[in-house]
Length: 77
Image (cartoon, rainbow, N blue to C red):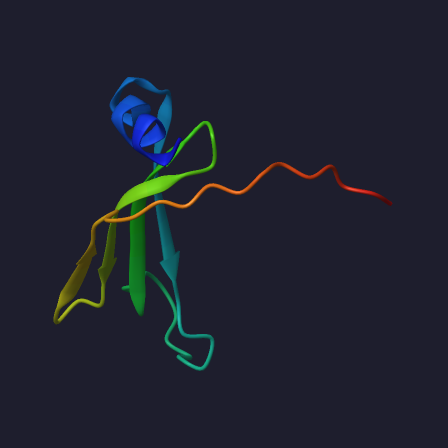
């Protein structure tokens, strides 16, 4: 049930994640500012929320507004 999963998210274990992307074409040396950063909360069930894309001059905040769960299917190799 998606509604149940969303209700239980605040109780689940999560990790704050921040990923910084740097422009490989930028040839400056030393400390650099990233081209942009992505931050979010990653829950133990793989769902993420509270996403922020920070481009320096502006930032975009993403909000989990809908959730559709699919039946688990095992991987076959």
